[in-house]
Image (cartoon, rainbow, N blue to C red; front, side, top):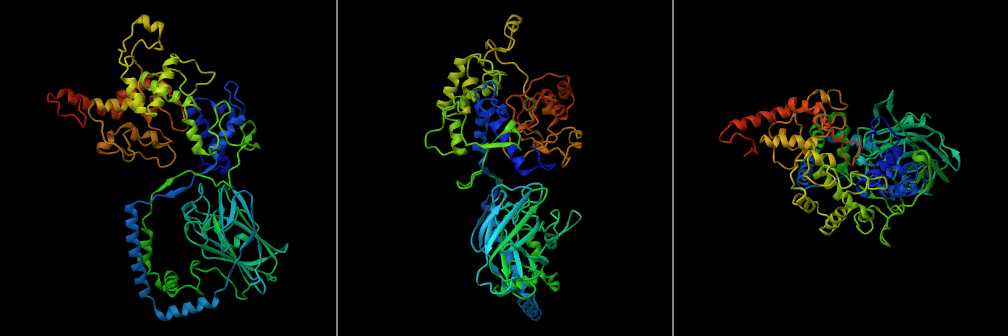
Length: 626
């Protein structure tokens, strides 16, 4: 699935779930369940409701990225914190006491006392809004390109006077992409947000604003800046964003034009509208009745009325013009802060906030109909009574041979095809009604039972197959036998078929003594014509790996989706864009030309010739031919 050209996030998720259900059906059930996306399967006993019930099992999960702590990075972070503390102390020591005192007095003079507002009501078009205490609101669940948050507050009695300003704090949180404060996770910058409009009413009467300020706004976006004033212009295409400053707190202050009495029910609407998900993930609204002109603080995390002196000194040192040169070492150090590696995870959604799955008429995203409960296809035995309805229970059901008898047969059939060139059932990804009957059904059943009883061990299964008499037969075939059994369905001879592209390359390198036995590590870049990636989208660069990495096993070849490795494609390798149960197998002149002219095969040929001419046999690479 490709999101690079722009896509509705919910539609993108729906299409991803379609791909996931189809792949699961192919890999674990051996059924063409994809047909049931649009209608009840015409041949196999899979209804359209069954299809979306499986989707409901897989769809009730979020896929956040999390940091993976490791001892080495933790040690670097600890050392970095010590260096940062020392740099901060050194910077504080360079502050002119008189200038700081004057600055602090000015900051405290213009500081405004804010009262956090605890929401009495939270509504949105789709995201889930939750009050986490002290007025902090956290948004989770699914987001769209146009999210509207509606918050209502009963103004506290402590606000005696006229409502003069509102403050919106955008707060970072490690649960959000890139630490927030926004929920953007694709197309835009991770952790960004775009607040298009802010509207407010007090006891049903509109509250007018005559000024807005922010601590930071993106300098350039579209045809202008993403500044605070944009949230009041009535134009949804403009707004306030703090892009490039993710993971930090920010604030927006709105001054009320004709301050009304601070009493009654305050309703605030926040509109987030962009060509990507752009809602705030964590925020807080506060109000003030101070007659002072309220403005956003340059350092939102530091309140001059209550912050300790050290924090105020750091705030001064980070913002004062005369400290610009002195703070450069600290700024450089902060940019070098070690980061934990990130990984993608899947997390089941909370029981009180499940994702709703609907049956879609003709499989169209925009035509969702009745809600479907999660479950397995009715043709199969259901999960054990009392089992939870989640992905884990579904995974356990898939490998329960009593309830899903197809998974073991599928695995055995795929292994058999890998060794013999064709499976006991020739349609590797389809064991349904339309599939041909097994050539040897008793053998398939016996192997499946043996596979399960031996703990689903593929190694044991492979050992069993390659040690069998049928596999160890000669692949020679007489004209009479070839005419009678061209596909070797009778297993009267050993396997004889063209290898897959990756194995063709590995076999050539192995025969030449060049194949590296190294295991693990990052992807490598074997040599291939530069023209392959010259017109590919995104970073058209392919510098062949040096040394031993040049001849690593094909398993380690970097997979570039927009430009798959040419030699593998020539030998019918897949593009990697979707799951396939079996590869095509062709024999073309282009394959012969690849073996004759491709750089890596020429290298293998030279090495093999050198080995053949060396009577000592000592000129080979890491695996010379003996």
